[in-house]
Length: 322
Image (cartoon, rainbow, N blue to C red; front, side, top):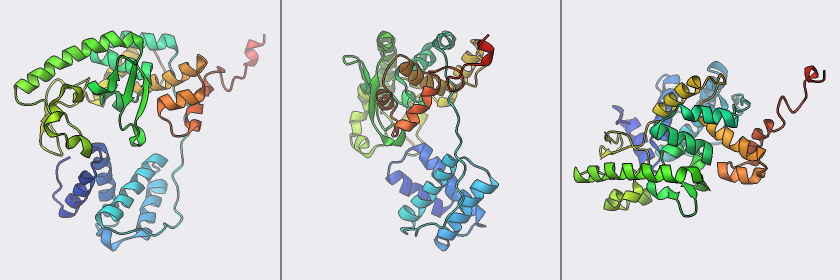
């Protein structure tokens, strides 16, 4: 994002970028810090502390009825502000109102529905959706895949800095090996064109990767699903070829779901839900599925067992007794 007109918010942005946090995290933290300041009539954060933080968190839960994850994100932003920008340790917060955690059973496609939706996706969108279902990736994890992340020999995908900033490995479906090799050949030609025109440097946030300098022009660092045109990095001002935007994939998937005649409230993430559920239905143990999904807690993975017995909790309807 562009620098702010406020010297203080520029200080915040600088602290975020020094730590190489993602652009999405930067945007979220800046939003919540500004929201916090506005809520307290533009009082400088240095003149506030635990009481004001508690009041703001209560406001989010009670007045704005935000989700628990949203409230947690706001709290993380404010703790970052005090610890890393103002260099102040915040004493334990007084008891505040926690936003209610929602419990939603995930929407899952049947195997037949997966096939129907994929039939209405073409090109990059078909390949991305196939990876979401075939490998269990989140949408951004798939879009951020680079050439080096695919291992055709061992048929595996390495996900770097996934949710929680964790790396993990998952399977690369046999059915996708040839289509992905063909995709990479097409992308390689685009990369060679970028190099010939004086561009082609990969866009990386990690300090370790940034230290590679000119090596970032190597083929292995390039996105597998790049945008059609180059764009300017809002942080550095450099011109790169970014990966496809999530919004475009979401829109194409929505159209495909409707075209397939599926009335479920489904999205790109439904492919990942279906990956987990179908693996469990085929006899794979829950710990294996947990590892493939990158869940920190097996209880998160257990939510997919709801489909295995069919119906609501596996209970048979009295209408079927007759």
